[in-house]
Image (cartoon, rainbow, N blue to C red; front, side, top):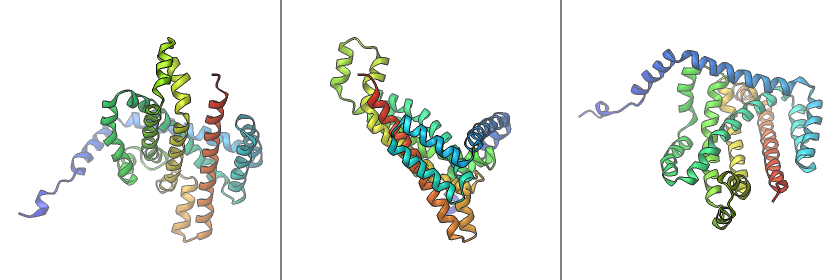
Length: 283
C-alpha cells in the first residue's frame, strides 16, 4: 500500500470552514477589524499627540506619583532610549499594539483562571488546549487569521493573544490554588460574602503570582512583535524585519533594543502598580 494514500491532511477540512466563515460572516469580521484599528489608532494618536519629550516627562511624573521614583526613572530612561535611537513612532505603535493585546489576554485569562481554580474538571479540560496554544507555531494561527482579516494588525493581535493567554491563565489558576485555606475558612466564618472573600482575601494573597503571570504575558506578547511586523502590523517588528531583509545590522539592533526597552517599561509599570495596590489596600 502506498503510504501517501493514507495520509490525512487537516487543512482539507479546515480550509472550507474558513472559506465558509469568510463568505458568511464577512461583515462581522470587517466590523471587528474596524473596531481594533480604531482602538489602536486612538492609543497611538494619544501617544504621538505631544512631542516625545512631553510624553517622557508626563510618563515620568505619572510613574513617580502612581508607583515610585525608581520606576519613574526606569520609565524615563526606556522612553528616552526609544527616542534617541530614532524609533519613537515605531515604539509607540508597538506600545499600543502590546497594550491592547495584553489587556484582552488578561480579560480572557483572569476570569477563566479563577473558574479553573474553583472547578477541577474545567482545569483538566482546558489544560490540553493551553498546551496546544503554547506549542503550535504562531504561523499556524496566522494562516486562517490572515485569510479572514487580511494582512494588518488584527491577525497580529490574534496571534499575540493566543500566546499571551496561556501563561496568565495557568498562573492565575496556580495563584488561587495557593491561597491559604485557613484564610478562606476565616472569611467564611466571619460571614463574608463570596465577592468580599474574592476581593479582600484571595486576590491580595494571589497578587505575587499574578504579577509573574502578567510579566510572562507581557514578555510573550512582545516576543510576537517581530511576527506582527511580518504581517503588516508595523511598529518595531517592521523595523527588525527591514533590518533583516536589508542586512542592516544597526537598524535591527536598534529596533531589538527598543523592544527590550518597551518590555522593561511595561513590566516595571505593571509590577509596581500591582504591588503598590496590594500594599495600600486596607486590611
